[in-house]
Image 1 (cartoon, rainbow, N blue to C red):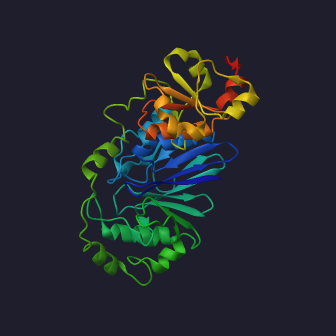
Image 2: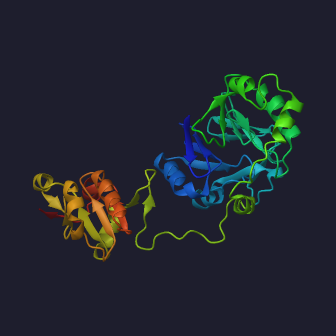
Image 3: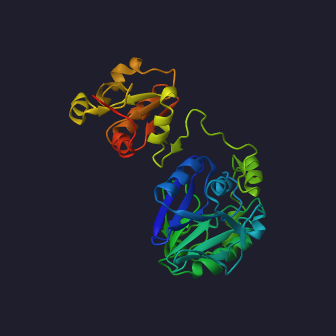
Length: 351
């Protein structure tokens, strides 16, 4: 199984991508709106077919990227009915399972943080995705959004703590650098509900935390009730059909650059030794070796978007990064470099 744990620093949110290695069918759990480009790039680069974005609940601390992901991939949006999220393609309840390839995520209703909270157990009960219900050495707060300390106690004690001790706990949040725990660890060491803590102990703890409300609650909750659908769609760059890679780089295809040669500047960052040995280049391309670029920035024009290229498209990624840091806003790397340019039979000339 393909498994990726992703993190949003601003909200302390974990998102999870799971995929079947044979069928390439995948699910995303608890995506983040601001990380949409990163997440979509990962799905595409791994060659996955995204079946669903699953929400563990209606979040109050970040906006979900579920609607954007559905818009770009056609995946289902999945959550519980009590979450009040609309639109939902599939609503799930206790005992339901969502299949992707040979694998399944089984639904546990775990209310308490909110009425709509669910946890998702991988088929072999080796992993559980607990949302905000159970955190690493903590749990979700219960002082807003239908929160109930009594319900949360029962959800954790009766359902999550009934899982095998070696079942790995993957929460929706952590703020101190921890990325996973286990049911056994939380049963023993969780300071709120572990060890000999009973319901009175737990409720007394939760009712006296006196936490400030999440900073984004007034924005996040209304947006998440719409599955993160924006009032206005983000507008893609109008200067080129760029794709954001998982590394965060803007990339364009050689075919597009060749067809729009007059509206872009091409920057070739190969060394002089390379250009002499390889014997081909793109007509009109500006030649500045990558090791000289920082000292020769004044030679790079700004009148048109700049498309960087090298032999394989690797060093030109660095060149594009340097230009962006130095104030060039319309910069993209040519995918695959000259190797792909030539493989596609695009025009070049002898050096």
